[in-house]
Image (tube, rainbow, N blue to C red; front, top):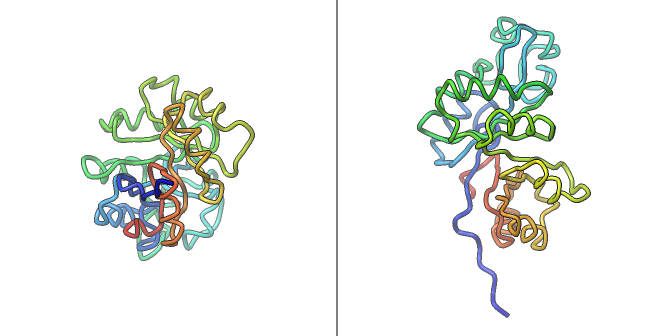
Length: 229
């Protein structure tokens, strides 16, 4: 039997910047991902009450800042007064695009409904359309992205292995698929590759799991500690 060897061309992808080393979804975290030579970094997009796009993972600011409340009920001015960790401010999407341009690719996770049109417009205005992958667990948002930009790269995310995920990804005309590392098998990797989909796995931090994913032949690993990849 031929011995399997690790995938040496696997992409190194930072998670929420590189949150193992800096406060998540901040410009400092993006800079860490750049310093660690990541091909991409993943960040999360939410909308404020005054329709500004900011980098925050949760619906509330409580966990990641020294404030309280729903992002959707706070203005950008309210949010900019908060400490996002280590004295960092919560960045706007525009600031993140500027920081990343020409330095690192971005995976923009659309966290709530109705973000696709504004996010795509901002990416286009920044001249980063070919350096961005749009991602979401909200698959309708990815359909909106596809209508806006037929050439866009889209990453359909699955929390757990749902029914007929390959068919779902094909129906959505996705270019990439994101799976939790606990759901990845050799058979599933082959099934996605067979239909031309690029497979990223999240959130892989332990060296043993990183090596297992490499042996299974996935295309990219999203990690809080991307230097371990």
